[in-house]
Image (tube, rainbow, N blue to C red; front, side, top):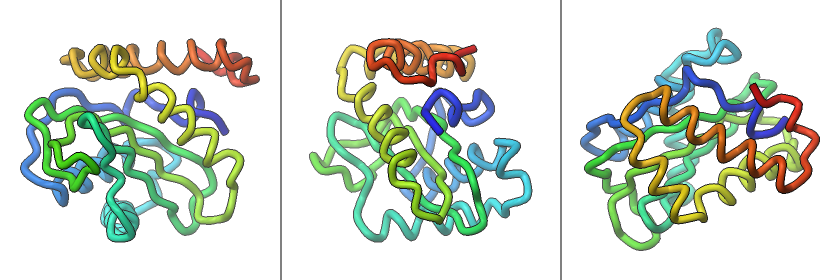
Length: 169
């Protein structure tokens, strides 16, 4: 699995107003549930898995970016999505700043380190570029945010020579 195949337009939301960390995780669970691979999973179970992962340590990094992720029992693929919150959310980030860009991954519970690390690593590489983050945060529509992130992922795949380029739409 790679980022291009994990990312779905249905799992992207631009410009939400969210009050706190718990509501952010609930919104991420709602977005993830939109993915066809998660249709048989309970939204509350996804939220609980995200919350349990956050209890181990915040996935809020610096510069307003978080990479919430979790493993879900009985799930056998990877789902990725994005959420932007223009006013930001207190997410216990490493730098203490509010988080505005959330790129999330729902993964299988079974150990699939190579795939998991590739998806998270590709996301991390994209969001390490301040210009890419600024561009993503300027997007005001779900479709625009999805297209912008997908372009970044395709460019990454092409630069890295991943075999995943064939999955680009």
